[in-house]
Length: 345
Ligand code: DOR
Ligand code: ZN
Image 1: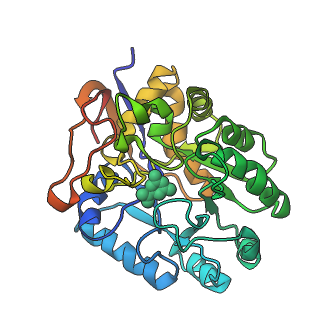
Image 2 (image 1 turned 45 degrees about the vertical axis):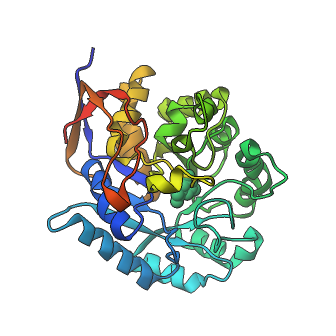
Image 3 (image 1 turned 180 degrees about the horizontal axis):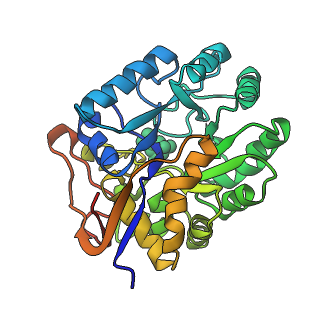
């Protein structure tokens, strides 16, 4: 049995680092495991221009302290009125790595998101022309659509026409959760890829109701039934360059989760690699882990692969019940569970 795995330094292609006290508390967990990360822009107010992205990037680096070699890759939050010229300038200056499309009201801090994707013509034409990736939260917001179907309906109603209308637009369908999304990304004759979270690989919707309501298993897109988890797992370990690591680590303070209206989001950054690797191990796919964690994403974004390596060893590690203190105390994904791999750095 393989006792130790050394891979090229990985990247996280989807993470929420937040701001203020929470940023101070969580940034180091991502920077400990990953060389780079795509930073979600859904702050209050959202990151919608170059100056805001530069300032946020500086706050992230300040939170990490002197000497950090972590690279935050900033994203621009798309709104109905956003100026394509600002996006193009940010990309040309190396500030923006991608744009993020939140359908308005789809998830946390998405109130300023896009109400009608057809209103984005100028932006989409610009992204297609300059080769800048469009990252999509792929759920319809139509309240008449069952919440467990919102991703599959988005694929059919919005994503399929989008790929037809913009045949060269680079798209990352974020945090996929369904067999429909995995199949679309696998089969599309289009430059499209998908990120996959640890939670959508490891647990299904039963986890939300395991002996009672489980707010710490609640994220969006919501966990799906077992058949979908298995389809997403198969995609992740398939070796296809269209699937890569994106934790969607999304911390909320305990009080905001354990509430009458708990926030969506799972904080998985502290043990992200251990969690992913346990899945690849269970699937007999250790040899494909490096591609998923350290190669496919960079190639899709057109960025160089990282130098250096990280090592994980086959050793039990217990996930603590809480991480951080006081105002920034968060319950991590898999709190109290034992994982069979340990990150050594
Ligand atoms: O569960 C989620 N949490 N899904 C998202 O799309 C946003 C995120 C957050 O920012 O908390
Ligand atoms: Zn997210």
